[in-house]
Length: 182
Image 1 (tube, rainbow, N blue to C red):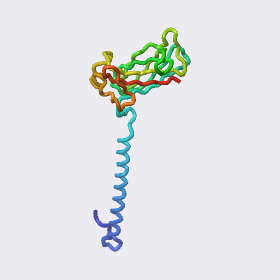
Image 2 (image 1 turned 60 degrees about the vertical axis):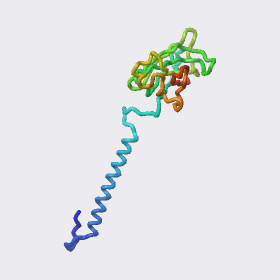
Image 3 (image 1 turned 30 degrees about the vertical axis):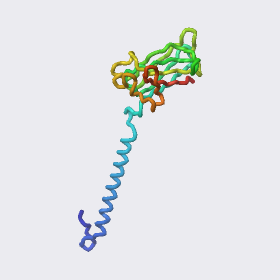
Image 4 (image 1 turned 135 degrees about the horizontal axis):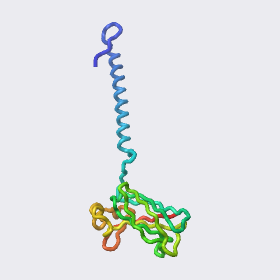
């Protein structure tokens, strides 16, 4: 960088220093803006970008809309696309619970979402304040592509760290979510 000429034709070192500070200040500001942009790009997801989780999950909502014979269950999961979930409604939680529907299978879509309407079993009806179980188990209904990712016995479901993962008979791991129907 060259020195700025002074009023008398000689170089003015003070003017040169001010020019350098001016350019450096703009440069630092540019770097600051660039840093903010990069941090934003790294920390905040873009629309349509799939978010990640430390382990597998299932999140859902069951909606009762005053139809005693139908219960809509919608949810999302980061299980592999095509994973089969078994969904069933009960009158309560616990050992003495009574099923209100037949178990119905639904596949997790490529976008991670699933949607199913349960039908009340004969002699049963849905109402507020019931429970809905959503379970992912390794079994013959799971596609080979899912078994390859999650493990033959559900070994990669994250038990014991994953609060949704349990171990059943034969050391088979599974995910279980209980949804309260409001």
